Image 1 (cartoon, rainbow over the protein chains, first blue to last red):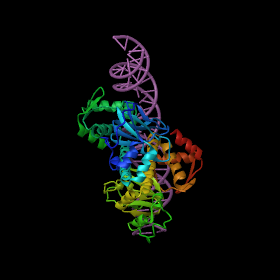
Image 2 (cartoon, each protein chain N blue to C red):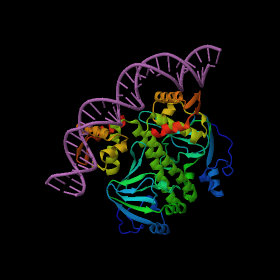
Image 3 (cartoon, chains in turn purple, green, blue, red):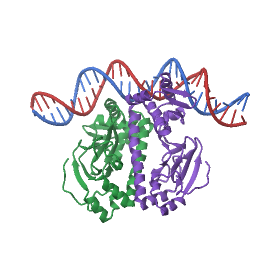
Image 4 (cartoon, each protein chain N blue to C red):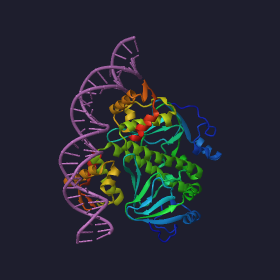
Length: 229
Length: 229
DNA sequence: GCTAAAATGTGATTTTAGTCACATTAATTA
DNA sequence: TAATTAATGTGACTAAAATCACATTTTAGC
């Protein structure tokens, strides 16, 4: 983790919708209570069970939110910039309830929790944006949970590939940011099962794998597999 | 569904933490934009895919939030009064994203979405309470999701029994509000598997089943089973 | 560039829970 | 109260993915 030169929040190119609605007084409060950090690939942003260091705003990069379960680690969501992570720490809880790890080089700002809360109390529009955010999260988590629970592994892996392609990288070809174990943690499966599924897809010419580069060759078939489970 | 006599929001005995912080002007706005309804056991409060009729506040009763998946229905959460349901409809979306069904006789108030949003914009404290609510939901859903995904069926059913006993009914003996299929929808299993697990627990004297009445006879062992998966 | 460690691939086997088919019991309602 | 429907229980069988064991490849550190 490195600390870059601090730039002004007001002139920040990566402002969130929520920060966009703040007036200059509020931006000033934010400015003086906000610190920046850069994380390398696989660096920990914060860890479950440790005291939290405020709300993190991911300005650029990609983060996995994960948590240890009774049997294995589970990736709860992938968060692409720009987005807040760790908002649930605005609750009384002083300890992180999950872990956040950078998957690619990631630039973040940390906003002190009490300042974040102050902005909610001061500015209804800010609060409204945060609520929109949380609501959207809830709905997508519901959807993901249902699909990950009810589909079998081919459908789940297809889902993950389509998520990476459509939502994260917006390209049919991308550098896979997760290893096979991680991918298993995302789709509720074991490393070996993920490998077997990917091999299967490769043999059927649905995807090509060259080192870390994955290309989706037949998206409509992957979508069919995703739908049929 | 029946429409009872309308009582004043201000004097309501079941006020939420959020409504508690409203001033009398705001309570008045709420009062004039809020309607009451009573639902019988198994009555639909709102259904996925239909236009939503505002945020519902559950004054008394018990509700299941569920959604059809690719294979079967899934219960996303059980909501005990007093609590809001359907807050994610404050998002632009005009259509319910999941279904809410009363499990026991349930008293609700419907608050028009735009009024709910107005209160968020007007009163930071109200927004703050709603945010606390959403954050708490997110964290508990994460936890439930991890446990339901990683444990095997004995652990999952034990979890459900402990949830009903500890969180919903606060008693070791209760009237089971869910049938075997519903219980399966809650713990990601089939009716037959739930039956087999309950029979197993009964034979081990962990629970007793007399009609719809379930009594937890050996909670510490159920907790052990919940932990060991 | 060499070596150790980490990540990935693959076959054989086992485990878990789902599926199917049907019996039994409970709850509605005509 | 009989008749019908819905809910529950149970055994036999099947399918899916986990587990285990080990080979191979890739990556990172010296």
